[in-house]
Length: 346
Ligand code: ADP
Ligand code: MG
Image (cartoon, rainbow, N blue to C red; front, side, top):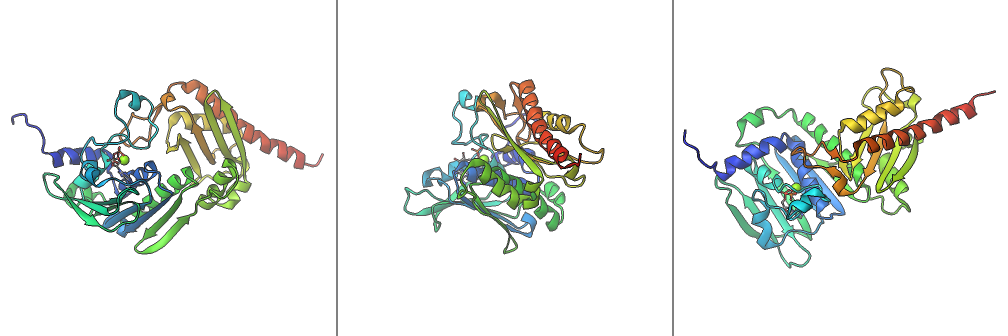
């Protein structure tokens, strides 16, 4: 074969292979876009586990008509412009690939109305050359992205779709995690026309800890809050807040484990190691730590451009961060041993 440039749709489908694994990955990308757009309310409307339809509607800043088609093309982003921006990412997205990738493996319509524009417009992506059709539409301020027939043109991927119930449970887990990270935002999750979950904005509460605690009780349970101790640790420009579960109350099956770095859900080895170390002497062998952890640090202290799906990060001061996490958790755990000493009859 001679060397040739791949047609755009094929190039996008290859990129989709990395980020669009299943319906929940589509939901993740679209909800993150809504968050980056400053939405205060996000509706996630799913049909048949996402096989049939994924519709994400937000009240964020919207996309002007003349940029709608551009939003769907590859490497098109409003979030970074140069290498300096890449060194200090403040948004959830920045690769400019999600909409292009998703639209290459589904029938995608994006409808948007910025506040400053009187009418709404829709862009519909179909066809091999990724040509985009822009038409007038009706929509309140904000954006909706509708994804129909995911993987209809990529049979290999479609084969890996699981039962509706399984795919929907992945979406539910994802929304729980995202809701946990943004307690000020309202999220409504629907499946097959029915509202399954509604997380209400906790903005009415007075301080950051109460707002977060309000959301924790919505996402996990109010009982969980009663079994946790809370700590906030600050060092330099690093802020850590921890809700750590009483060691003797920690579950062994389906433990509640939530860790966020600058609002991004993480499955990070360094964080897990630090937490395990803090709990090391207080858990039974089969028990798992249960916690909600938020780490906020300057954007240039952490590299999120490690993996397309952004599950992993690199910390510039890894050792310091590790030790701060251990300390925060140990302080929480000590609260409980102090409390139980007080309870014990002398
Ligand atoms: P990225 O998020 O990495 O920039 P995407 O392909 O997800 O790339 O989106 C491309 C661009 O489309 C974004 O940079 C943003 O300007 C615009 N966009 C996408 N979704 C929304 C939305 N819900 N509201 C406003 N703008 C959006
Ligand atoms: Mg994005």
